[in-house]
Length: 244
Image (cartoon, rainbow, N blue to C red; front, side, top):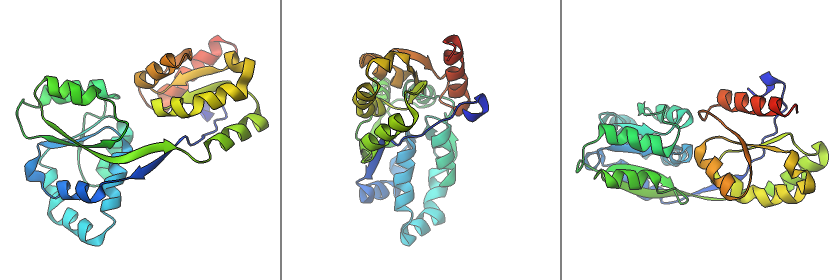
């Protein structure tokens, strides 16, 4: 998408994920009758389920009855990437136009009744409290289960150093998560030196933009929705305004 605007994009992996509590996750998935539905705010939560389903016996149970039973309940998702992974395991996603946790929480609250069965929420250790808090305030029960932990990618520092030494100061740097800001920023500041003011910093969405502002980075653009098309259009506009 960025290439269509004449940009050359370099993707540098920032995060590594370690999956945990997978037995507990499948145990809960084995009892759809206990829950009112599922909530997914990250593709990683679906990756955790897919790892569970690699075991033949679990996959068999899923295909034989569990998938069908879960499909009688909603599977709420935050965006399109998460929705496509939900479809891959045979479920029907809802709420994929939300784009962030705040809007997904509003969507869920408009469809769920207080004191119904709990929604099962497989999530990461760094999850924000926005969605759980919003649901709690409306009396909608949510059962969170941490299924992955986020750490800094082992090659991050080396990859950033290599980029700066080979390609120089980038016209723009895009962050896709608050964790990305946390793990990358000091390296980018060090490598850019005084030229950091020449870089246009972009955010995939409002949560990431908030983290950037809190870290003292001027945000030149936030994608209107977290899609490649909106991100590319936003960066193009920001760089054109600066004649980059």
